[in-house]
Image (tube, rainbow, N blue to C red; front, side, top):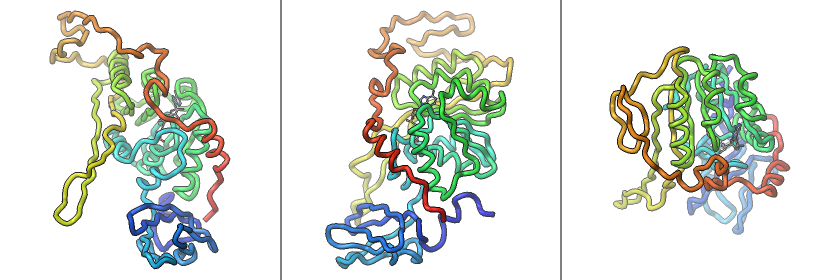
Length: 340
Ligand SMILES: C[S@@+](CC[C@H](N)C(=O)[O-])C[C@H]1O[C@@H](n2cnc3c(N)ncnc32)[C@H](O)[C@@H]1O
């Protein structure tokens, strides 16, 4: 038996497949192949029937005479065009999460929140059918959209995926046996609130990776990981991806790029009753900590405006989520994919 979803990624285009059409100006249009349907532009149309049965990577002639390129969207294309309630983890960060958190086939992974399900799909691909991804999401409407997105991509419900609607802190302890989860991935406003339940769930040596949008969140979660005492010294990084323009002799970086998506911070669960080794290197000025008998003086730093706990809201962190009206429209549009 082939791995879930793989059958839909190969072979000629079939009814129900999503196809990405690239027009002569390089613009992308995604359609779901339906017999008898037409894809219309202001200059004419393309018949879906002319694509059904054609090989992936074909060109198709529009009634205006222009050639359109037809390809099955890759996961990275799909997540950027699928319906979303919350901001998605971009493919460049999803790739880093899978690699830096060492998400392996067969792994047991816990994820929160689910949002639109973009990261969940990368995690499911990495663990495969024999692994497990248990995702937690506070908002039932977001969870519905994420499930519909994943089902449309994999062609069926992924056997490794469980979605629980609820807060991670409240739901995780009863959902998993303590010390059994290999990897935990958090993409949420306040990951520091979850450290206790995450530490209980992780196997010794297990990896926790958090994706946060702002430096204030990064700082708060790093300090919380250190203070918690059962995690290794955290490591943080970000990834900048710069596309290149390739045209004749004009081979150069593209002028536009996504300057910022988020920061990643990783740490590992220590074995029970193990305390992290004392850091030998002196922290720089401004860091308040006790180092092997040396007391560093706590700096008199004014908290950043908005650093108060009450201020950790999506708006305060500049996050954009769909309006109530858009969510009502999106959830109305959530229909199960045509069985294939
Ligand atoms: C930015 S979105 C996640 C996007 C997702 N990673 C993706 O790629 O589509 C953050 C989500 O976390 C959820 N959330 C925040 N705190 C949570 C918690 N403690 N437990 C469960 N879900 C939480 C929010 O409702 C929101 O949907």
